[in-house]
Image (tube, rainbow, N blue to C red):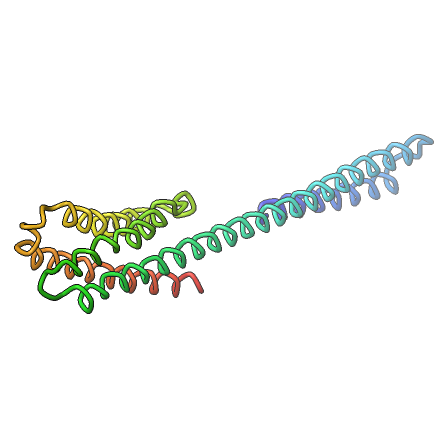
Length: 208
């Protein structure tokens, strides 16, 4: 834009000098019937060129402003979509945390038939959480968030696989594997808490 202004200034300076020369030519030069017409025609052409250039500059400026507006609008829409996706992941993470925490209260006890039944029943809940995480539209996320989504997806599916694998064990092996099963869930709980803190920080930054 600065270069355009400089060009306009040079043109006006040229017109001004031409006008001075034309006036001097009109006053000093030999009288001629065509002299005034020629000078007027030249000045008219220059004026028309300046007008066309001015219209071009105004149109270019408006196009640039429109482009900037559309770009900002697109960026704002993208941020809004990222926020919605992150909030959905945050909610699913909260469901997963509650699910894992419930094991410490309801299932962390000596193995029994009742415990076996509850563990099998829990497959429905973790399956729903896992499927919901898998169905998240990760195309709305940029590259940085994409990697974190993949990690979170891995955590959830790992919990699902741990429960399915434990429930498929022969009944006589389950009491011996129960402690290791709960230890694995505890380590995954730490990952879920870490992800929850990460999501909160990212949503806070997107408010700016």
